[in-house]
Each structure stands twice: as C-alpha cells, then as structure tokens.
Image (cartoon, rainbow, N blue to C red; front, side, top):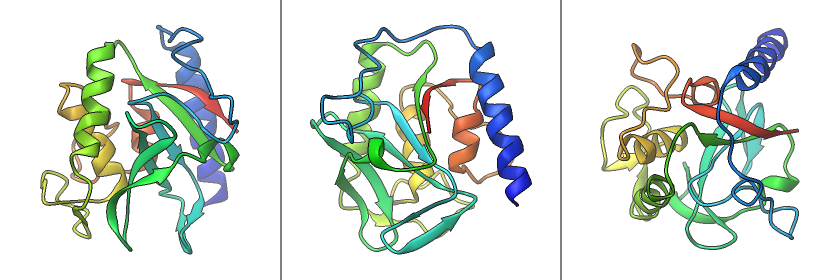
Length: 178
C-alpha cells in the first residue's frame, strides 16, 4: 500500500506539472492564518489521513473551500455534511487544487452547491454517487463541480469517486502539497 501511495504521489505531481493554466497568486492565496488553505471552490484532499478519530487510510478525505471565510464544507460519518474550520494548511498529507479553466462564477457555484447540502446525512452507499439525499466526502466535492458542468472524477467508468481520483483528474491542478 505504501508503494501505491508513493507511485500515485509521483503520478499526481507529474500530472500537475504537465497541465496548463494557473490561478493568479491572489486566487491561490493561503490566508494570513497559515492553517487556512485555498479560496472558495478549491478542492482539498488529504491522503492517508485520519480525522475525527477515523483512520481513512489510502482513500483519504476530501472537502471544498466554502464561500464562508475560514470554513470548508465536508462530510463525515458522524454528522454528515457540515461546515468545518479550514485548518487544512496545518494538516499533513494534503493537496490543494483548483479546477482547470473554471470561471469565478463556477467556483462560487461549486462552493454554494456544497453549502446547500449542509445538514444532509453521510452516504454509506459508495456505489451510488448520484444521490443528492446524502453525501460521502469526495462525492460531495464531485457533485459540487458536476453541478457546474465539470467532471473532476479520474476514473469515470466505475461508480465510486475517491479523493485520490479527484486529485488525479485531468480537470484538477494541484497547487499545494505537503
């Protein structure tokens, strides 16, 4: 498993170098509070992560930066979709990425879509990412961007959307990793 993670990191790093397009420094800013990472609509992925007492292992965790300053929208088994403090800049094993070619309107739309799901339950049916009644973490991020007409899934022939698939998508560009 460790070797697979290492190879995926290499692949993702190489992929981000080959892609075109960049956000401006203002758009990619890490706020003055160095624990806050990204700007609204940016995708955050933790790989080999633990959070809220749950070891996510290789699949990781995903969230989206909220329109609300200092917050992300994330889904966890304990409480479903909720606002969380954006402390991603202080976490380890994190990627921050933007969506290739997306407009400011689409960034706001993706962040708004995610916020509109707050209060919904966690989706334990990982093979049904199409539901909008409940969401697992990467499904929420995927659906937020899908609602803007951009598919951020890497493997589109399977029904599961994992955080690492989002990181490897041809439509995402990693601008921060640690």
